[in-house]
Structure formats: structure tokens, C-alpha cells
Amino acid sequence: MENKMNNQKQLSYEYKGEYQPLQEGVKDLKQRVYFPDLPSGDLIEAVNLAIALERPLLLEGEPGCGKTRLAGAVAYEFTQKNLQDKNNKKPEQKWWDYYIWNIKSTTRARDGLYNYDAIARLRDAQLMGTDPQRLQEFLGIDETENLKIRLKDKKNYREFGSLGKALQEHLQRPILLIDEIDKADSDFANDLLLELEELRFEVPETGESFPTPTHKPIIFITSNREKPLPEPFLRRCLYFFVDFPSEEQLQQIINKRFAQQVAEKQEIIAKAIERFYAIRQRLENVPGSRPPGTSEFIEFLTALLNKDNVEQALKDLDNLTNKLPLLGTLLKTKQDQELYRSKKGD
Image (cartoon, rainbow, N blue to C red; front, side, top):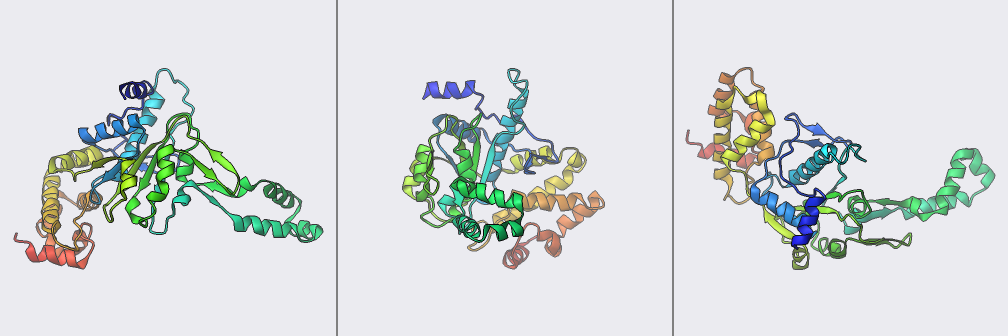
């Protein structure tokens, strides 16, 4: 194991959390936005252990604790290292290969690997079976020839999903995020066992076989613990529970993200954080309630920072129970809003 970890360091597959995007966010070639992220030392260690052991890192924690941002933070840092590598003055790519598979309740395991459009192929075959002269008159010469070429190769009807792309050959180890795996049905995680264990897959419709790539993907999997995950799946992962950031950590995140915008508004920040954690504390153990997360707090704070002046923002914070639009940035149900308002003692 020690040799494997040393080898990963030589290849610069080590995450330190030291490269941060600009405060206003940075977009990659797919228009995905990256913001500053401040992971804990334990979380950084977990990332590097997963990289070294070539195992998926399963991240659990309540919504809004920062699980999803981690994969992007790693991709951003590796991109920056690649660009600044003195031995790589002309990097082959501007952005590190980073794939996201957003899981829904209807998602099947195969969806992440590939999609084969058999209906489209049947339609094309039926078109070619019609009168060639009439088909050419209808489609034109170029499109008719393209139709013939497309029909000659089944691969033209196959499209890879995020997992399928990550399991192919790359110049470096790509990063894959499987987001909110607990949204899928109970069989979903078990259907991925072979792919996660051996990092290979096949496409029976085309007869293709994709063996384990030379540069294996770095896989992050997130779960909000909406439903338990099967034991065979858990055995194939490293596990880390992401705690919700403390008030001090949240202060650092805000200062890093908003920078000069909050330099002279620390009184607003302090009171907003105080209100935020008071709301969370009141809702944490209430069945059916959902305490706000960091994304809601950022919206809440942005609304306050956009006020005409500091005094107005502080007044709104003092009178938050009667500022329902502002309160609605944090609490998303009438039940939670009424619970907060009924227990507000100040």
C-alpha cells in the first residue's frame, strides 16, 4: 500500500485543498461553476486514501454540508496543478476530465454506462428499405449517404454516459461524481458492483468490451441517507461522514467566497450566522423539518448584502420573523417557518 501511495504522489494525484477559484466563481468548458471550498484535514486525508487505494469515496451527511462540491474542488485543483507543472509546459488539456452523474428515482445502472438507441436504428433501417429513389428525393443525396454510413455500424447508435466515459482511457485519472445515489431504487447500487469493483464494462448490443483503463477514475459518491445502501456496495467503498461546518468554518467559507464584498460588513455576517445556527438548532430534531444548509445560507446572506445599507440589513435580521420573503431563503415550508416564528423568543 505504501508503494502505491508513493506512486500516486509522483503522478501528482494528491489533493491538498490549496488551490481555490476566484471568489465570484470560475466556469469550466461545460459552464460548470467552481467556488472556494475549505475541506477539513480529515476529509482531505480521506480523499487521498481513496485515490491511493483506487476505491470510490462514499460521502454521507445532511443536505447542504458540502459533499457535492468536493469532487469539483479536486478537479479544479488537479487542473491548476496540471497547468502549472514545470514539466508540462504545454498541457494536453485545459480542464481535468470531470464527469457528473446526477441520480434520479428513475435512473438505472446502465444509464451511467451507455444508451443504445435500438428504435433509431430500426427507423433508419425501415427508411433504407423504402424506394431508394424516393428516399433520396426526400432526404437529399448527402443525408441519404449519411444514413447508409450510420446503418453500417451499430456503434453510431450508442452513446456513453458519465460512468462509461470515466471508464475509458484518459491521459490522467479522470474524476467521476455519482451524486445522490440514495435517490435510486434499492437495486441500483447492487447493479453497479461489477463496474465499481473491476472498473470495466461491456456493450452487448455492439459487441464492445472496455477493459479496466490504465488510468483508473477517481470516484466520489454522495448520499443524503434517505435510504440505506446495501452491504456489498458499502464494502467496495471508503466511507466518510461530512459534518456540517461549525460557525467558525462557515465564517471562513463566507470570507473566502465573498472576499472584499464583506470586508466592511462583518457585523452583518456575524448576526446572519447567529440567526442561521439558531434556526438550525430549533429544527434539527423536529420530525418532518429540514434545517437549512450552506447553499440556503449563501442565498440568505446574498440577499442581506444587497440591502441599501448595513443598518437596513441589521434591522431585517432583528425582525426576521416578520420578513417572510427573507426567511423563505432559509426555510422552504410553511410548517418550518411557523415553527421558527412560534419559538422565536427575541
